[in-house]
Image (cartoon, rainbow, N blue to C red; front, side):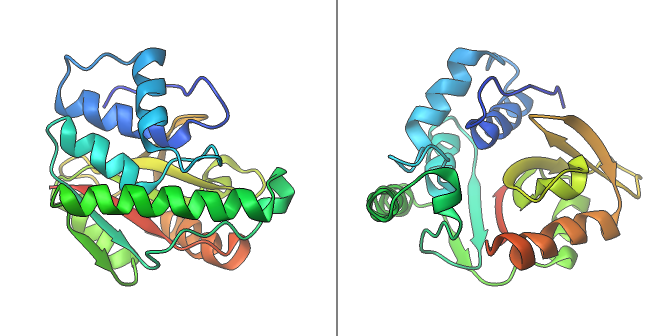
Length: 199
C-alpha cells in the first residue's frame, strides 16, 4: 500500500481512508484535495476529527463495502477541554455524529456494537482485508498517548502487521504491540477501539 502523509494535524483519519481508497482504486489520487474532500464529508463539526460513520459513508460512495465494528455507538470525547473545546462544541459534535450514523444506516452499512479484540483484528487482517483501526498511536510513535485512526493490513505469509500512520509512516508491529495500542487507548484516553473493515 502506498503511504500518504497527512497535511494538517486534524486529517489523520481522512488520510488513512484516502490510502485505503487508493489501494482499492489506484485512479484515486493521493492528493491534498482528496484528503480535504474526505475530511469535509466526515468531520463531526464543530470538532475537527472525523466520524467513523462519516468515513464509512465516504468509502461506500467510492465503491468500497465498509463494515463498522465499535464498542460504543454514541460519540464521546472525554478530554475535549484539553483540546480547547467547550461542552457546547461536544453537544453539537454529537448531533453531527448522529447525522453521519443516520446516513450510514440509509446506505445499508453494517454497524456491529461489541468489543473489538486483538484476536478479531488478527483474524480479519489474516483474511487479506484492509482496516482502519482506532488505537493509541502514541504506542506506535513512541510519544504521548493520542487517539488516532491508522491503516492496518497483513501481507500473505507474514507474521507481523503493517500499520501506516499518516503522520509518522509505516510500522511493522506484532500482536503484542498492536494489542498494547488498543488496550492503552481505553486505559489512558478513555476511548473505545473502533474498526472500519473493507469486505
